[in-house]
Image (cartoon, rainbow, N blue to C red; front, side, top):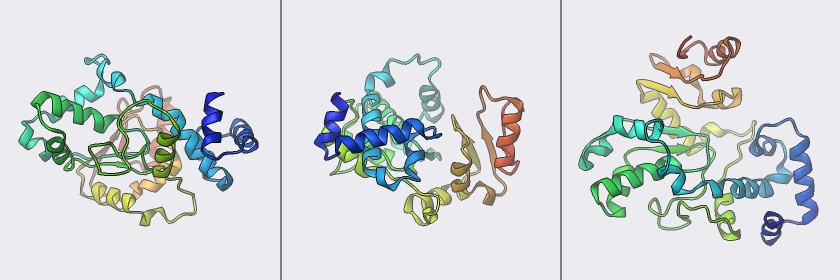
Length: 249
């Protein structure tokens, strides 16, 4: 298997790869990172496996060929529509538990090609619109930093996987995550926000706890809940201290 060979190239022994696969298949977890919170022995190979699975999804064609009438990215851009000089004045921030980077790349491409601007000019504008990855990301995009960057591309090889794995953070339940800079900035943004929107969120109790939503006061909090049963919506409201409004509920 090609993926196994790449992991071997990155220093993983075949016996360890087999053990990791067996643990993942037999554990009652919904994701690799959920397993890694409890299995320090699989941290390195787990981060590599996450990177290996997600890198091929970073394909610009997936962003550009969607039905624009149903794409929430295009809908969002329409709401934020502004001249190039003032686009960065939009009072909006994004916080995600995802590792991949389609939203920032979509904004970058949209602004760059609409206004015919250089990469550096667009990067300066987008610095004013925070996109925070609480658990890290698949490296910095080549317009976001000067080193340790990776283009938004599906090319998956040992070098790309190694770089991405370095930027993935596995946060253990007992870790003092509130002191991490990305969480400090998230708490600051949530505290300053007048409206908080959960979009496509899984409402995992641990993730909700880490956002410290219970401390927020005088905020309008709404969230999507497509496909949720009434009992599931009730549970979500309890998890969020009855501070969230779910459409149709």
